[in-house]
Every structure is written in structure tokens, then in C-alpha cells.
Length: 414
Image 1 (spheres, rainbow, N blue to C red):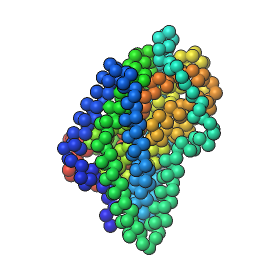
Image 2 (cartoon, helix red, strand yellow):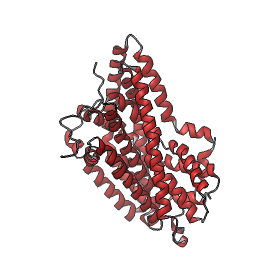
Image 3 (tube, rainbow, N blue to C red):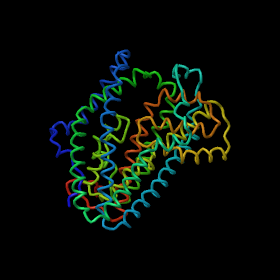
Image 4 (cartoon, rainbow, N blue to C red):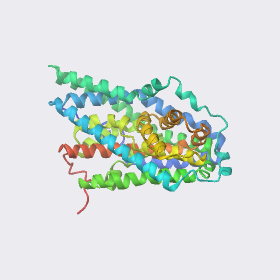
């Protein structure tokens, strides 16, 4: 029974376009920056290109994720392996995101991004901001926003029930055909990715302006540097332990990284990263469980972003924090970071929930952070995405269920 994930090469899309996709997206981003900077009135009207693309693919992404999990779980003969892999993934996610959060706290305390001249930040404040609207419903909204987790749980249960069915092979084959059909439609929509990247970047630069980055440059630098250190040191060392090169892996997924950057959502490339990880040799069981679970639990980017921004506001408004306060911030962030589960902009919603839960930080700080959230979102989304890809490789290696593809060399050169 063939349950492998369909690959881009089998969709009928011209290979030349796929090979040059990274170049097309890069060019589109540069054009978007130019239009947004020099023609802001026109650029701000192009938001529909980016948001419209996400609306088009979202109805396909949800069922593809659902079917991927079902097929992966139902193809495992030993159901104990499902629970074992799932448990290992969750334990790994909690350890790695806690480490990321600690790095974020330490970076904010050491660099002190909030220690800036307040007279320089007025230009970054938007004229209209309603931070509390996203909190209607309280913790009920917290659960609703984390609907990818509900999707994962339902898919795992369905996969387990299907694995116990006597007609499993017939049903899985039918589901595989349907997923391949959805995947082909999605890949044709991906022809619009450069257009979406252009519109999204033109809108962001027009809406907030490059000038908004200047007074908050210290905060942006703290966030980007901390996330880079996490990726290249923490994740790099973990891969090195299994003789995997982080640089080769990043080069292998460079097209997906550009798509994630341009759309501010890792969900857009779900089928692409699943296909690439399986092609590289990762276990189907690990890929099918770990990637979807990672969208809700392995959010290293959000785990860095939240403490850095929280401590930034504390420093900016001269709010004294004791060791007890910092520990409380960490515990709250361990929960609220899980809300940033692949939905564009949900990291800012998680930050809003964090502030409201702590009840010690002025919402004026949220208004300030909102002005640069678009530029922060790319960093945390890419960090989340890379972290999930690395997690699949590590868990597959730990499970001794990784078969390297001779055509894809990810090993560290001797």
C-alpha cells in the first residue's frame, strides 16, 4: 500500500517554475518593499493580494493536514508506536520551547531593549488600536484559537479507528487519492505565491513604514538575534549530535522558508515540508504526528518573542520586576505561547492574552508593539517552522526510523 506524500514534481507544474520559485519570491518581496516605500497610497491597497491568497489555500490546508495524520497513523501496524512517538514529540516540544523562552528572558534582561529614549517612539504608535477585542470570551477564545490542536486530536482518533478496520487498505487508498487531488489544486494555487508576497510586503511597508522600525530597532535586533542564536546554536548542536548539517537542511528547505517569510504562515507549506521530510528519509509516522503537533506545541519563535516583548514593555514603562514576577511571566508564557499555532498574527493575540493575564502591563505597550508586529511575525514564524522540521529529523533519528536518501545529503562532511 503506497501511502507516501505526493511531491511537487508529480503535480504537472513546470519544473522550471518550481526550481526558480525562491528567486521569484525574493524579487516579489523586493518589489513590494519598493512600492510600499515610494508609493504608499497604492501599496496599502494591495493587502488583498496577500490575505486573499491565504483565504484561497486555507480550505485546502485543513483537510490536507487532517488526511496526512489519518493516513500516517492508520499505516502504523503497532499502535503503541503512535502513542510512543506522540509522547516523545510532546516531551521534546516542551523542553525545547522552555529553553527558547529562557533564552528570550535572558536576552531581554541582558540587552534591555526597552531602555530607549521615549521621545523617539511616538511615530511608531498607530492612531487606532483595539487590543482587547480579541479577548472576548476569555479562555474560551484561547481554546478556539488553538483549533489546530483539536484537528490533530480528531485526526489521530480517526486514524486509530481506521487502523482497526478490516477494510483499512481500501479506505486508506481512497483517502490517499483524495489528498493527492487536493494537493494538486494547492500546488496550482502556489503559482500565485510571488503575487501574494508582493502584495503582503507592499502593504506592510505602506501601512507601518520603514521609519517605524528605527525607534524600535533595539527590540527588533534583540528578537532576531535571540532567534538566530537559538536556531544556529541550539538546533544546530542537536542536529550535529546526529551528524546532520543545519546549513544543508536550511538549504534543502530554502523555498519553503521564503514562502513562510512572505506569507507569515507556516501552514501554507505544510504539504511541501511533509513531502520533503519524508523524501529526506524521515519516518512517515513521525512526520505525520510531529509536524501537526508542532504547530500547536513546538513554537520556539513565539516562546522567544513573548518574553522579549513583555520585558521590553516593563523596561519601557519602568515597571519593577522581582524574580517572582519573572518566574510568573515564564509560567504564563508557557501556556499562552500555545495559542500561536500557525494562524497569521496569532502571536500578537498570544501577547495580548499574556498582558491581560499578568494584569501588570499597560495596553499602551501593545499598541506600540502592534506597529512592528508584521516585521516580528516573520522571524517567529520562520523560527517555529525550522524548529518543527528539526524536531521531525531528531525524533526520527531517536526512534531509529530514519533512512537517508542517497540523493539528499544532509550529513556533516567529514
